[in-house]
Image (cartoon, rainbow, N blue to C red; front, side):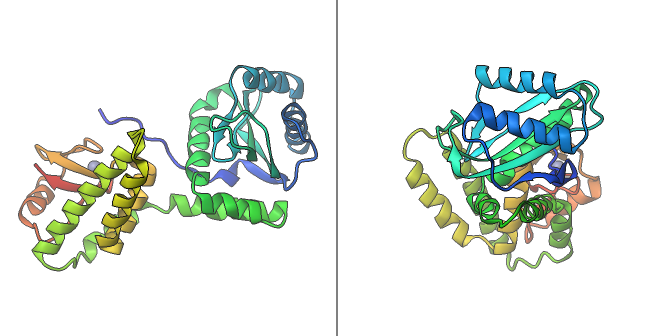
Length: 284
Ligand SMILES: [Zn+2]
């Protein structure tokens, strides 16, 4: 079976503008958590601030929610809430949160969610982490001039992340035109090498710099349009390039329509994508 895929979501669906603080008043972790929890409960008119705060504090003492890259995601499961809700706060100077990477925390997403919305919560966290792992995105949040501005940056960024990969796959299908057979073949090989290097990079303990350089070199050789699609798919549902075995896409485990499988098998002039999951596919 296909592994469950995390869905990216529009973060600002769960945040209201009045719950975005451009600069925290408090300077230490405990005070920050208190300040932010109160902001969320008061401004969203929610009940149960006491138990929520207890839970947030307790969780933080067992394990820091500083997930690295300047982000922290303190959270509590609160019965009686209707929907997941989140307050966002910024500290330009950075806070000591005992984050996993020991770096100071600049943006905090304080999340409260009802017990029935565990999945929504996991998807929310996945989106936050994906979005702000990109240094340019984090910088945009740090550069925003006001809470209002931070809210629009967050909206824009998460909208950009969600732009459906399927649309790109469709464009590729309609207008493949990647030149000669040799080019398609070369691109496919390059994509495979790129993916391999990226996997190596993720797991490598040493030599990361050299792998990164190789990744950059390979990227320069790939047709930009393909690269763009590759990056989009990688960001939401790696791997981006998968084999087809017995007409079944090994990314989403859906069977290709037999007519399409036939085309993929015969038309080696073009690079093909799975119509279901939009990953690049090749026949084995
Ligand atoms: Zn697929």
